[in-house]
Length: 238
Figure (cartoon, rainbow, N blue to C red):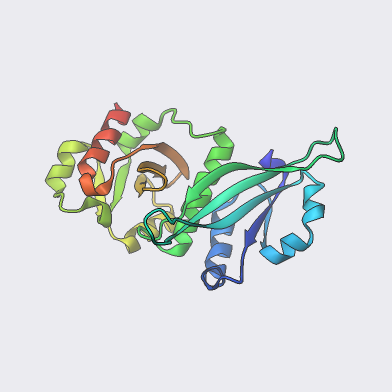
């Protein structure tokens, strides 16, 4: 359904963080969002025309979200991209339309810069729409031929020799700048690993040339060692 819509990227420009990333967002959308036409709109402009959007099934929405987490007594902001679709019941003109979440991806600025992070998350959203959810056909064999780019902050104290024991396929430990460049250049024959902890430890492997998700599943909390996550990946490749 998304392919037949116009995607409206809803941004709250009252937040300084969003205003600062405006240029990066425009570049990322131009590079990564290929599934349908799009336009960027301020949240208030969308709200002022909300009845128009609710009466139509011609629009999908990407929201840049902030979720406050209060469980541990502090409120870090979990920034994410949420892709939604307005579903209207044409059989009942008086019914309330529903906005259904179709895909979500966490923004993780620990591993790459803003533009490349947005590109990565748009790839994830798009892949979920194209495949109807994460599908990993041929992913195992493909990962064997790719060089896995591992963000240096995930490695901890593990040496290259220790990583090789757990993951006997090509890999390279990269800096934030190196990973950002690889994503924006779509470096051939590479994929990279991302680790998120919200709401639980998860690992995602993204193929850079094809912009497809090769793996998405349970990971291990980094404090217990990245080696356990590598074992999970090795078992998946088998």
